[in-house]
Image (tube, rainbow, N blue to C red; front, side, top):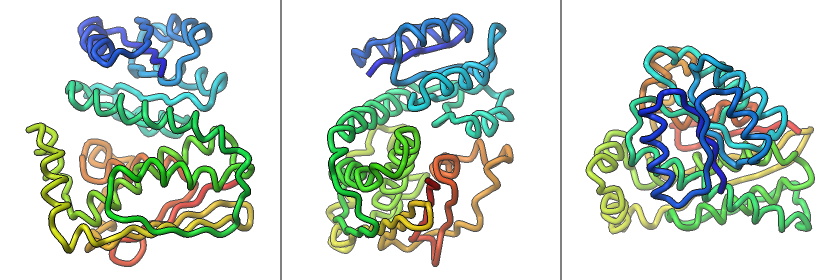
Length: 291
């Protein structure tokens, strides 16, 4: 994976650069959007991390230029306390996610590893373009984190020949998030507060293992139904958890919606699909991508 980091705040730039070095990632840096775009055209990175507020070409402008040249590039915006209002604008223009400053090292490394895996899976997906598209497809899989990347890869392959590469990247990112939620928050019943505490205390694997030892939870499964009809692709994901009050999720365009940890994944997915709705008690989600 090749990463371009664009940040005009030198202390933040050095801090994030050290994390990139630690992961052994091939990267370049720039201190403003204009220089960043010149480097982008030459370096052709898979992943761009960009501050929003910069004097020479803002992160929003850089995002537009990057997506116009290479739409499949993953772009994550870095936002400070006074730039939350630009997050929704960035997401509408094709940003894939955002990180709020100050950025914790563990959070940043988790982001890097997550997207590195997704990029690797995207490369693998290109090798299965000969798969025959099925118009209706369903599967169930056990409560397991390890199997999710393979499930996502299979689901993306089902849309090959129907969706463009750029749209396939959207659904890869979105389905990864939704399937993780189905296992983590649905079948294993892990709350956002429990996960946050575990990440802070570096005990997330222990939390996962503890829940996977509970017979009731390990016996649960996730069902995915895919169909292609009427010029759109549809996925319905159902877990066996207790669900949640999805009506209580704040408007993602509000400040509360942007800053609240609960529902962040849902907020991101709303921009990666053309339509998204939770059904029943909240343990079933339906998403659509137009062709």
